[in-house]
Image 1 (tube, rainbow, N blue to C red):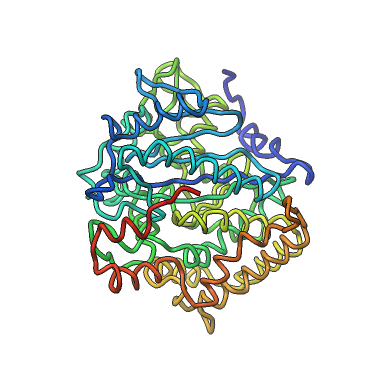
Image 2: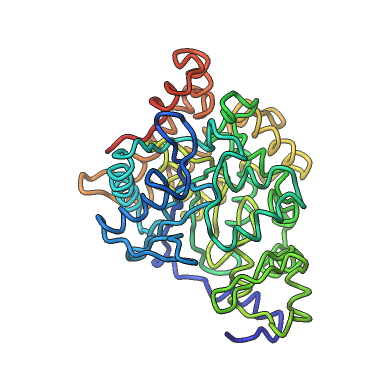
Length: 447
């Protein structure tokens, strides 16, 4: 590992990741909460009806390769796709970077088929929700990953809801490429600007601890008191001259979690990366591998690594999972559409952005900014993305373009609803606030 000699290398880390337009791809990460069908409780990591069992079965039946820590399986790899575990046993498919959403959809469908084939034999189901609906924080078993042994105890020092974020919540996110710094900053700024709209469109976590929690996206509310140093909206994203240098300066001053040496995780929670870069620690000095690892521990709504991650959506029912990458690909991979998406939000002040951001957690599409509701803006955004996908004209074997993956989301918006609105109506109506009925309603089914 080469030691970083000057700060310019940190900016170069981002600049060197630029790609020509023909090499742009979309990666999607899908997190899912698993529960015991009979009780609604979160499945544990250990045991014959737990996460580890599921992973071993996926290895045996579907040619996944294991990654282990201390003898525990903590990830699977097959080709360019990976399965990761979140702290509370949420199973995440980190998909292969795809040229089209048709590819993304096929990969996700295969993953769900494999996962459910294994899980349903043990009365384990996965829910299309943004957080665990029944199990309380203390009832959920920690996944035995080394990084979580550092992150878990640190969370209560910097917020009251961080362990909830780790163990109870689930998201779907889209990862996109950029050509150069100018393009990256346009996407970074737009992703940050659209955050309240995307939260509202995909809000899907109104039930937790067995009851309504008062929010459409409680998952997003949780982020407001997780760790303010590393999450939320970043004000500098909206500066006209924003650059990679600004993101570097931000990342340098965020407290670290760890560095990795010989597969061991060294606790660095007492240092910022800036301090570590300047002084080292116990004979260790900052490397680009340390920098890359540090970037994965920052959690703003739009994150820059060697690509850009849009992180504002709750996990969804399976029919809506492809809608998030489709929305992002349509709006962000056409220059005119990217500008049109930014135009929706470019005039807001910082105070207005924060008001809309916080309002979207509780009220979702009903949140208002100036004379508009987020519902009205969401309808405009989906039309922008629709046009972008139409122009990109990526066709499947039936001659359909990628707009087909926006149809379920568009239908919801036309009804004036987000997924949480539907779920709240169902919970208070035909589901009769019955957890077993909720499970039947929201469980993933075999495709």
